[in-house]
Structures are given as structure tokens and as C-alpha cells.
Length: 553
Image: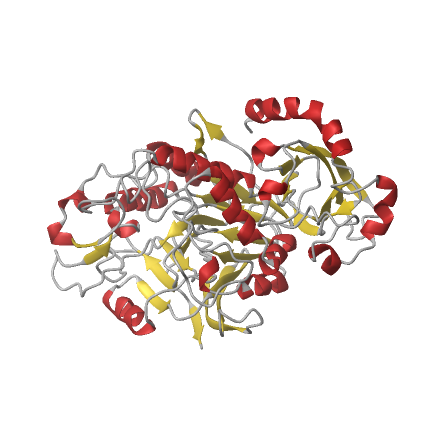
């Protein structure tokens, strides 16, 4: 954790904290003596936004937890009375109390303390609670004066040498406010997962600042500054269904492009803007301020916030959480601007350049080491975008193929390095989890994505790509053409929004593709569109072969 920077902010802030609480007493929460009455308020009344003195409810963005370790988990909140009026917050640090309990009624307290919410970090609070027991549920909450946050449920990872009987995992991505309700998050919360993996595009950088999800998208109010990105997160996190999904379980997260700007690659955006580095640093800081993650800032400050992390779920699963954005080379063969395009293989020599990176050399070495050292039954690569080959035209001859350059198809040499790492590491049962393309896909990854799997072209891993929470996609007929044209793709569904729900056991991993009836309807029901099961290969450490069973609706 970047203790130096945060402590510098907080040390100065502590001197003003008592004055802040006193000065804000009439504005904030009142005395602790009134805490019992506030705790008795219903969650609905609290979220209606009216505090004890009419000042508003300080926990309007809810709470969250994430980055679970066997004895620790990160708790998060942000003090903000009105998600659409951050300017009304006092420019003073606030002292926030927190509690972690063994039970939902908070009769048995496991840990408690205070944390500062400094204005320099948008009054966000990150508490890395340690000393917890492995593999168990906890409940947590924050308190400011007599205001009490919603209660969140979290859990620690299992003990390192244990093998849990199962893990229930929800996987989601791509939740553009403009394109529908967050009904999928309501269903994630109802599924009661033990862990949620979010694979990027938590926010989108543009859209009107509206309290309700609109019926149509209007491209306005693009974010460029720290305050603008903070406002965007506040808008998204004001949604009660998203809050409910955060309250249900700990999250592990990575980002994609829209947390900063569409199709950015490393230090280059579509505009080829000379000021993009400052924009990216602002977006990265806002991301940290609004997520339950540990701070790991490299030499470049917030402009180089490290996102690739490793999480072990006992010996059942190891999660290798990747960052496909920060270290990649610019997209190939885009003329006159930055960003992506679709290009023919034969016409874009840069696609064949072996030096072009997706993960960057350091992250590639880190991944190879984590795979080689893994003792887990399942090795799960949680990353942003579709890894399977996805030509947009039929593959008849050797130089055929038309590819979108923002995904792994635009970085074929980097993909081959990753495949060689999988094959050479001996890591057991690799699974690749993906998002970004707003489509459900099931795929079998082979060294040569242009040919069917065979003894000479073995399955290295299985990939399951989730659709979006809201963001739109192509017509289903076109997706079926993609599946027909690309040997690695076994299933595709682009006309539904939703999420993936996994059950991972030592014997098998099963996934259900969960699709909403109507993304515009906050009360939309959901149904299982397809399900797949991959058996654990207990005899070797290579991929476990063909998907053994599937059902479709």
C-alpha cells in the first residue's frame, strides 16, 4: 500500500478532523448519544437521503468490500450527502468509525476502529481490516456521528492449504448508465455469491448526469478531469441495485478502457491528445477512490496504479487478475487517430510484429511466475476482453481474416506468449474469464485459432465471456455468423444483457449464462440462456479437453 502518500494526506487531515466534526456538527450527523435512534432507522429511510437534521444521508453511495485475503479484506465507503452535489461537501477531513462483526446484528464484534475521509481523496474511506479468520463470512458497517451506513456482507478467502468444496462466483462487466437499468445487479445480489469478479467498464466516460437511467443515450458531458470522473462514479454508485450487489459479497476488480476513455492504449487515446497522461492519472485516482482495492502506486503516482493482482481461494482456485490496458502497445493499422479499427490480416503487417505487447513484459513475467507456482486445482485468468479468435469474415485461405484490433485478435504475438505460458507452466485447469464485447461466448482456446481442436492443436484452456450489464451489442444473427466462422467459438449470444454465475468445485466448473428479459426494466426477470460444465483434469496439468455438457435456452 502507498503508505507514504496516504499518511501524508491523513496526518495533515487529522489536525483538522476534530474541528471538522465540531464545525460540521450542525451539518453532519449530531452526537453519538443519538446513535440508537439513527441505527433504528430503516435502510429505506436512510437512502431517502434525509439525515437527523435534514443535512442528508452521508452514505448515499453505499458500502463495498473487496480484495479478500485469508485474514484480511478491504472495506470501502465515500462520505457524500448528495451524489449529484459533491461541491456541497465541507473541505475538511472527517473521522469515520467502522465495525466488523461475526453476525448481522453486530452482537459479536470482530474488529473496529476509525478511519479518515480526507477531501483530497473525495472523502473516500479504505480500511484494510486484518487479523480475521480465514474462510468465513463477516458483516461490516461505517458510522459518522449518529448516521449508520447500510450493512455489507463480506468474507475472507479460505486458508492457503485448504480445499473448499465449492465457490459460487458471479462475473460481470460493462454497465453503461445510458443503456438500461441495473437489474442484473439485483439478480447478482439475490444469487448470494461468495465472490464477484468485475472485468471492466465499471463507468463510461460520457452521459448526462441523471438520477435515473434514461430511455435513450445522448453523448454529452464527457469526463476529462478528476472532479468529472468523481462525479461519474457518484452517479453510477447511487444506483440501489449496484449497491446491493456490493453489499452481498466481496469483489475483485480490474478495469478496461471506459474508466478512462474509449479504446485508449497505454499512454495514447483516440484523440492523440498531448494531455492524455494527466487525464489518465485523474481517471486512475478516481477509480481508486471509489473501489475496495489496495493502493499500489508505482513511480508514476496515480498515473501508474498497478491493477494486476493475484488471489488464492485456498487450493481450489487461483485468480490471476490482469490489466490489458495500461501496458499495451497502440492498436495496429489505425490511420490518422488512435483507437481501434477492423483490418484484414493480409493488409496489416503490424499485426504480425512479435514485439507488440498486450500485458507488457513485467506483467507477463509476473503471470508466468504465478502460473508456475500455482498449486490450485483451477487457474482463472480474470481479464477484460475476448481471447478466442473472432474473424469477421470466413477463414478459407491462410491469409484470410478480418479482425478488430482492440481485442486479443489485435495482439496475436502477445496472445501466443500467453498461450505458451499456459502450456509451459503446468498450471492445472486454466479458465479464461472475459468481458468487453457485450456478448456471451463459450470457447476452447487452442494454439492455432484458425483450425479446429485436435491432437496437434490441443485445447489449452476454456474461455467464458460474459455479456454486459447494460451496454449494447451487435444483432444475434451476426454473432451466429461469428460462431460459424471461428473454430474456437462454441456458443455466442449478443441479444441479452446479464452476467455469468459459476460454481467451481474440485471436480468441475459449471457456468450459467444469465440473461435479462428487458434491460430497460428494473424489475426484469432473468433466465439461464445456456450452461456449460468443464471437468477437472486430475491426471494431467493441461487443459481438461472439450466442454463436456451444455444446455441451451
